[in-house]
Length: 128
Image (cartoon, rainbow, N blue to C red; front, side):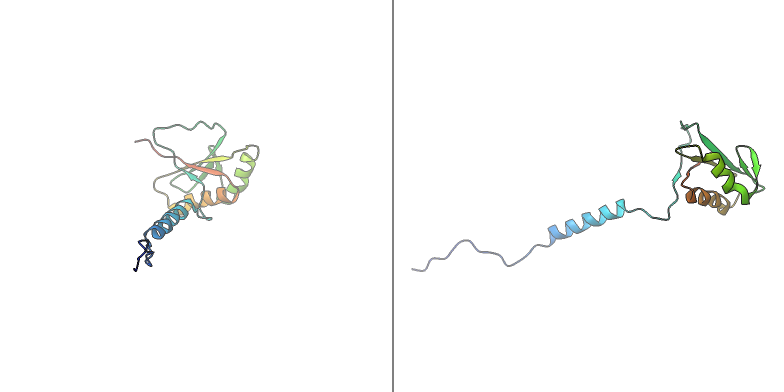
C-alpha cells in the first residue's frame, strides 16, 4: 500500500510582501531625508503673530537699499552689522521684509548671510 503525504511544500515564493517592505522603506527615506543646502526659512501665517521679541529686522526697499532695524546699511556691511546685532542672542532670528517689486536674488543674499551664520529667517508677509 502506497501512502501519500498530505503536506506538500510549494516551491513558489510570493514577492508581494517583499515589495511592500521595499516601498515602505523608500517612502520613509524620502520623507526623512533633508537637503544639506537648504536654508532655514520659516514662513509665518498671515494672521498669526510671532512671540519672539529679540528679533532683528532686515528690510529691502524698491530702490535696493538695506535697512537693519530702520538703520540704512550698505550691502557689503550687512553681514558684519547682523553679526554684531545678533551676537548676544541665544536663538538669533532675522525678520526679512522685502518689497514686492525686488528681484529674488536680493532676498536670497540676506538668506545666504543668515545661513552662513546659523541665523533663522522669517519672511514677513502682508496679511490677506
